[in-house]
Image (cartoon, rainbow, N blue to C red; front, side, top):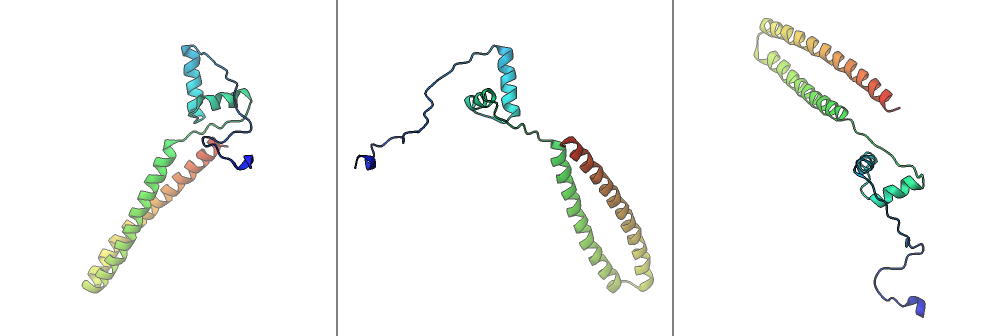
Length: 141
């Protein structure tokens, strides 16, 4: 019956941490220590020190802003590209229905030139993306 009795408060821990060690740093060591903590993305100093003392591996994750910016710009570009495709279809329909055949062919010729220019830009974007991917994969392997 004594096992089921609850006194309240925190439940007892099997392996209680009761030994305390105090460490003092000078200003230069403290700056180095804080820099290491920031690189390891740790917020609790005691946990970080335990990991260092007992040689537990800790990860340092770095983020590259250029990747995020490049992906955002690329997705924005493709959204504009899709919009151009929709407008292209609407333009061809209007040319077909609202203009004479000769005038429609002249305007379609201009539209075809713009389309070829856009295709060359897409090739350049593809080359830049492949170059960026190779640089990114080499950096993190």
